[in-house]
Image 1 (tube, helix red, strand yellow):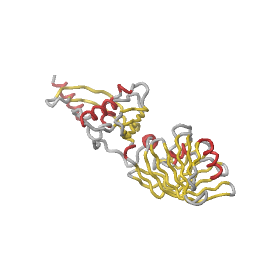
Image 2 (tube, rainbow, N blue to C red):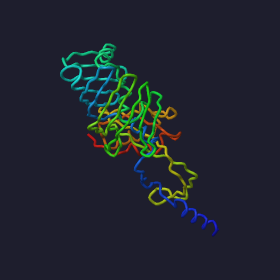
Image 3 (cartoon, rainbow, N blue to C red):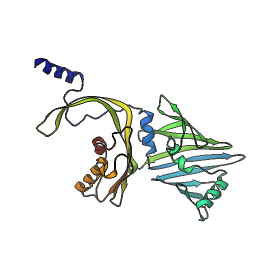
Image 4 (cartoon, rainbow, N blue to C red):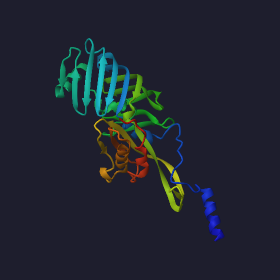
Length: 312
């Protein structure tokens, strides 16, 4: 009997000890692994970027001021300076394209693609560029990455026939983002200098680090209802990523998530509905969940959705 007690005490001291169901906060390294950062940046759906662009296509070229506003899947781009006097506004969502010229003329659909290619000297890859300017590949297409192992960020990328060189990064809200990049395809070269970039927190991507667990023993129940646990786990360089966007219509949905977990059974959805009911807020939310392991939709992920938000 005594040996069993000593064994338990020794195991508790060497491993994690007896712990409640609440876990201590995790301290993350200054530079997160690329496998963690990539999905977080790809999940960014709301950002605002201003800078300057220089385009050379054959013997032609121009310089312009650039303003890029990303709102979910729609990109709003303004070029000031080239293509005649005034500004040209471009709105893109998937293959849908709409252009408003400096004269107020509207061009859309296939005609807009042809018009833009004629004006610029090439058809800009807007659907992928929204990812490239954040320093990540377009998740919808295969890519070849050149990684800076020390900084855990891209120094080069080849995708969709384009090669992108990242020559300068800057700190933006605790994240390292490209400040200078060059895109090259055949005779076309595009240089982009970012002067300012900001995020809209409605599209934040949250990371929940994963771990491997060797064992878990429930050794008792405390007076406050929590259980005493004895466990051993090891943090690993993988995480689940949850990107959350606020909906004004009060709907709660999960358009992207693990296929083996139905939306109605996902604990992140159930947690959001419970929070909505408890607070009385008229806001809703949409989430995109990317799991790094089969244990998607678990209680830790649900806890991530319960960030305090102002209610109306």
